[in-house]
Image (tube, rainbow, N blue to C red; front, side, top):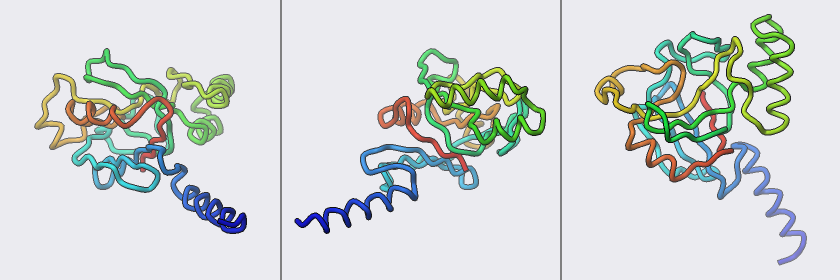
Length: 184
């Protein structure tokens, strides 16, 4: 194969990856709140789609604040995974993201110190502070000892994305700390 064709193949693969933000072999999650689904992707290839997810009881927001019971929209990464939780398993997201924090700072929802702490955490690849006016402890989790029928019928979380316990067990086979999660 000539260098010219190698360069073209590399450019084509880079262009394909730009659209999703992931490359083949890199797992990511797409949460579609309008259809109530979570899709596990390998690059752009669908591995699995979970149906009937639950989100925040009051829907979604790109300007989430503490206690609003809304699921934040945006692009996040899994920041930690906990198996010791009342929700069976918990995949914590690195919420708040920089865009949300910047908007909140300009509106006076968070202080300059909180905004700077969030920026520092993201720059270092760490989980940002979880105790600001933007709320925290947002993630993907199971239902624990909760009611499976209620899960299928209602959005019931305080802002997280919920799957059944069996589904979250399946999901952890594909994801790790650092996995990209897009909620839209």
